[in-house]
Length: 299
Image (cartoon, rainbow, N blue to C red; front, side):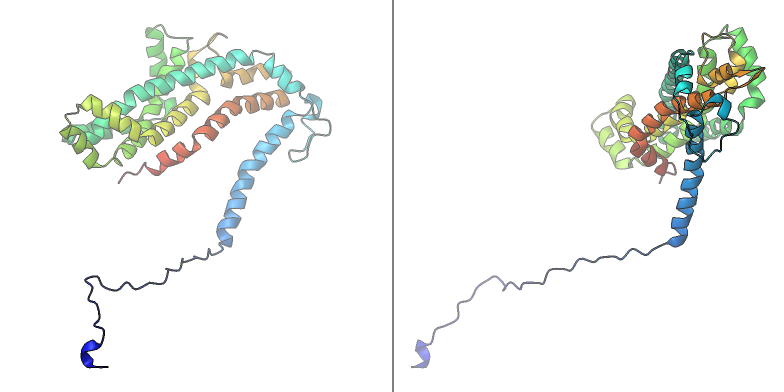
């Protein structure tokens, strides 16, 4: 065969493809941490044991409450204590507490969200000074100003009403709420504000279409925090109310205390029933609560 008849290789423009081996997935081995596990078990015991003791004691008879061991299950469990609580005006107390908590949450959200928005977006010396001055409320205990508050409530003719509980509770919940919301609002990137500003969005539109939707975690945290302040509040209902009309759950515990003794199982049953709604709210909003707490520090 002559040299001219040999087949010539065909030139192609594309480079030959080389099959690369698939990357192996790295499996990171989780190292055991016995110290962290032991600490978790200790903390779990610290939380669970009192709850178990409270629930167990609420199922005992009144004559067996004093001699009953806290960790021992009741020998003859009974629901009479819960029946006593439910038929002793518990619904009225629960309704007043729900109204007080809803009022506190509404006031805190309406005031704290715009305040936090102004504190984050306004870059001036006066804005920063006002924000720091507002946060001084965290360091003021309610017991130190209860007498001036009492005089103000009396002058406004709000004594012995739910507003006498709602207004001071909301005022003392606002500093921490503003601190939480400002940390959450700082996590919103500046590019989002600039994009809405280029679209011609006003400050109010940015607040409702950008800030509030992007701050659901912080808002959920503030809602739970302020609701807990109203739900567990004892000082303001004790000082600013007197009759049975505006009574809340914390004051309802006095119904089982008399000069002849204390109905311990009934008190614990009332505590268990009053904690169920807050526990349900926490289960529903726990992810948003954790996300809001993680964003408190800001960027």
